[in-house]
Image (cartoon, rainbow, N blue to C red; front, top):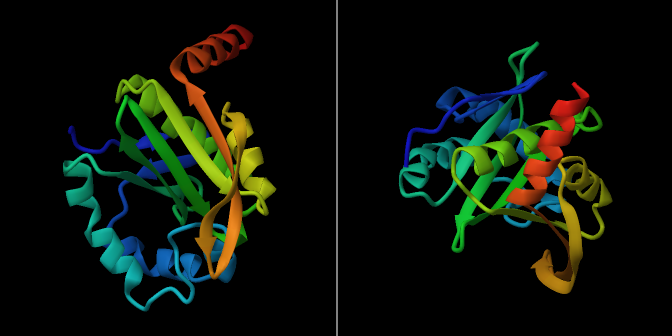
Length: 189
C-alpha cells in the first residue's frame, strides 16, 4: 500500500496520528460517552493506551489492515477525534470514527466521513463503504446520512457491549451513488 496521505477539507486536516497526539487522544477517548458509543473502545481507557495504539498504526497501514486518520481542526491545530477505514474482501471497507465530546455538534464527523469516503473511492478503488452505529446513538446515523450513506437495516441484538446486547443500524454507500452525488454537487457549485 502507498504511504498514507493527508486529506484536507474546509475546516479539517485528516492525517496520520503521531506520538505527539497521544495526550490529546488519551484525554478525549477517556470520556465515558466515547466508549459508550463505540464497540472497541473500553472504559476506563487504559493509561498510556493512546500512545500504544498510535504506535501500531504504521504497521497496520503497511499490512493493509486499517487506515487511521487523526481529525485535526485546521484553525486551532487541535486533534478533535479519529476516523478510519478497515478494508474488507470484495472491494469494500468499513468506516469508523469518534469525535471528542467538546467538539460534538460542529459537523466534524460528517465532514471527515465525506473526505474519507472520497479517498476510498478515488484512491483505493473501492466499490462500497459501510458503517454501523448503535441504535441508541442516532446522532451517528445522522453523520452517515450527511456523508451520503443509505440506511440498509437494523441488526437486532448484534453486539454485546458492557453486558448488554445492542441493536446496530447498518449504512453504506456504493461507488455509483457517490459518483452521482459528487456530480450533482459539482453542478451546483
